[in-house]
Image 1 (cartoon, one colour):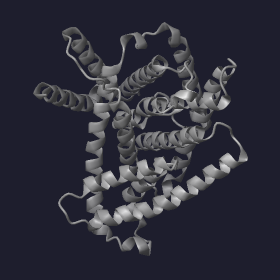
Image 2 (cartoon, rainbow, N blue to C red):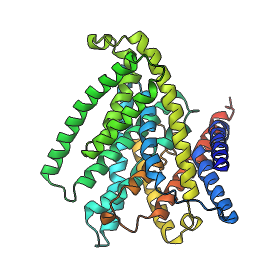
Image 3 (tube, rainbow, N blue to C red):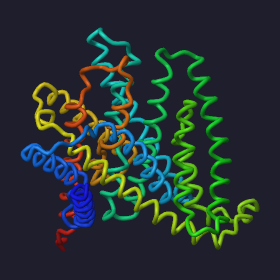
Image 4 (tube, helix red, strand yellow):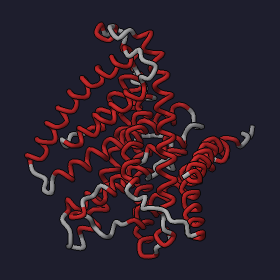
Length: 393
């Protein structure tokens, strides 16, 4: 046990070094974490060390990681007057390419004639969602406007991806009642999110015990998981809570907000943001190390899925390019920042066995994730060189 603790601590310290070095190398830390996890697996196989089945930990870490990462991203979002265009563009960039890519990939599988279109949509969706877990940490060195766009877009993508996934899970057929029921769930969750946010903000300001942030984070996770039991879109609560807390100082003109004692609350929000950021790093690093450890080399180089992976990857890049041009957004470096990752894995693992399509398997998911991460890495390196290149007079 002592050896395992030592190894785990060393791996986390290496993950921290990867996070720091990515600023200079432009290599996304997730690639290094996956590689490190894979190397550890090879060492374990060579030495014959007996390791228990760790697959059961992946969904657990993924769920907690997703909550913390979306919360971390939403705490950084500023909803002030001049951000309306940014919010709208990032929302549309998250929504439209996701919908089109999901429908395109689903149609490919539907053409085989073996599966219902709803099942095809359910299986295709994880490949269409941008991973905020990879995107947000990778853009720290971009200018503020591009960094904010990526935070908004990837957070919206995570939330919309989970919403659509839950909708497809709950409905094997789409009818008028399906949309009515989904609309009612949204209204219930919005009302619940508003009340829950006020309660948590009140607790954040009023708890005087020296331990106060961990209970708040635990309550956030608890509310999200309870909402899942009732098939409610709990990710909306995470987004609303994070945006409200992160923008509390911009809401001071509302009388009911003044009762929260904003001056004292602002200091607590800063500390809360730091705690959430560090917790998100711990869970994210552990998740990708574990995922890298569970990677089979044969799955990475599976020739049976590589063509389909390239088709999916090329389609998502082409759609992204088209809509970046349509919305008159900077192609460089935004074209490169559409990684698949934690949310893709989590949604893929959540597909019920009865609705699973064999075409979308571990190899395909892994190859799309690696292709998008490598593409982002090269794009950020290229963009960095362009920025550093001296201008000619």
